[in-house]
Length: 383
Image (cartoon, rainbow, N blue to C red; front, side, top):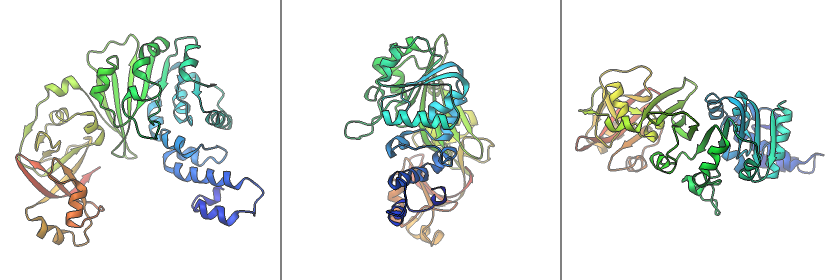
C-alpha cells in the first residue's frame, strides 16, 4: 500500500475488488488513515508496519509536533496516561520517564497500542484496559506524572469545552488526582476560557497555549506538588519550522500593564494567535514598546521592525479611503488576504462585499483606529 499513498482510496478499492487475496477493505482504510496522518504524524504515517485506528480516534490524537513539544516539558520516573487513545501522547511523553502506564477503555485501541509499541520496540509500557479512574484508584501512588486528555464529545457528538462537561470530569476528581500524582498535566480544548479554568481549578500553576503555524491547537494545564509560585504563568508558544516563538506573562501583570495609543505608523503588528488566545492584550505592547491602535483592536503599530517578536508584521503601503473604487484597482485579480479586528464587518463579509479571495503576500487590514473604522493595504514582512 505504500505505493498508493497518492491514490484515491475509494477508486483504489473499486479497481482492486475481487483481485487480491488480502483484506482489501482493511488495507484501504489504513491507506485512508495514513493519508490523513501524513502531515499530523509523519513518522508514524510513513511506518507501514504500524496500524491506525478509526477516523475519530485519529482526529482526536495530538499531532507529532505538539506531542514532541509536551515531551520536552516533563520528566520523571513514572507516569500514567488516563486517556491513552491512539497513544501518540503516551509514546512521546514516556521518553523522559523510566516507566509508563497506558489506560484506555476501548479494547480495539488497546490492541492497536500494544501492537504498535511492539513494532516500535518499546517495552516500558504497562497497558491497562478499563475505566481509568478505577485503574488509578487500584494503583500504588504517587506517579510522578498523571496525564489526562479528557474526551470532549457529548452524546450527540457535540464538542464540549468546559472541564466539568468532559470525561473524566477533572473538576469533581481533582483532589483525587492530586493524591495520586506528584504532578498533573492536562490537555484541554483550544476553546477553553482560561480565567474560568483558574476559578474552577485554582491549584493550576502554569498554562501553555500552543499554536502551530499561528493556529491554536492545544491548551495545557499544569500543577506540581510543593511548587509554590507567586504568579500563575501563561506561556504562549507558537511551533513553526522557522523556529518556535514564546511569550510568558501572568494575568496579574496583564492587569497592571499600560499601552499608549497612536495613529498608524509604518508597520502594523498583530500578536500571534497563541498570545491573543492567552489574553496578552496589553502585556505584549508594553514589553515591546509598541503603541496600540484601539483598546479592543489588539493591533499595534511601530516605525521600526523588531526582531524575534511573536507577531505577524505588516508594512503599511497606503490607507484605502474609498474601498469601492480603490480595491478593484489595487487587486484586479481579487486576490488579497483580509484581516479584520474590531471592525464593522467580518473578514468573510469584507471578502464577499468586494469579491475578494485569499492568497499572496498582499493584505487588507480593516480595524478601528481611535474612533474610526479604517482599511489599510499592507504587505507581510514577518511570519
